[in-house]
Length: 153
Image (cartoon, rainbow, N blue to C red):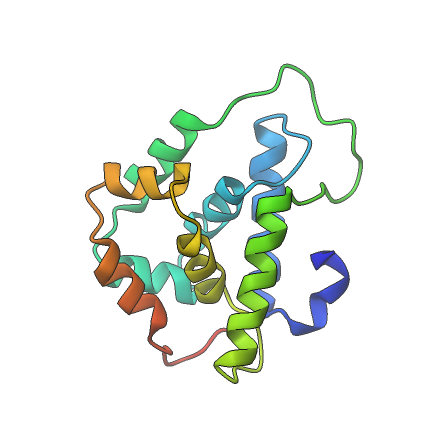
């Protein structure tokens, strides 16, 4: 589980995962989905992924609205105390981000690598939300693939 692998995660990514937890809880969900991961990124102003989104001219306000439109809202608070589990798809995305970091010889898994891994998933609500905002997916992927300076802490 990702929560046990914290030593490989940038401090910023850890914060983004905490924000994803908050987003899931705000919607009374019992798990963190890929959409919650992206909502956690949208909350971050200075992370690598947010800088790439801005460079690709993605309107994060519109992206957030598109995501909130498709996410269900539970009727009751989650029964889980502490960290909510990741959905199988969200866990796969985190694992893919770890593999990307290793293959790129990056010391840590960052928000940028998580969003790249999110975009690897085909035909998802995330991709539809990006398209609804008019995002140029090729440009976004190129911006995310660039190693930014400064890197995340």
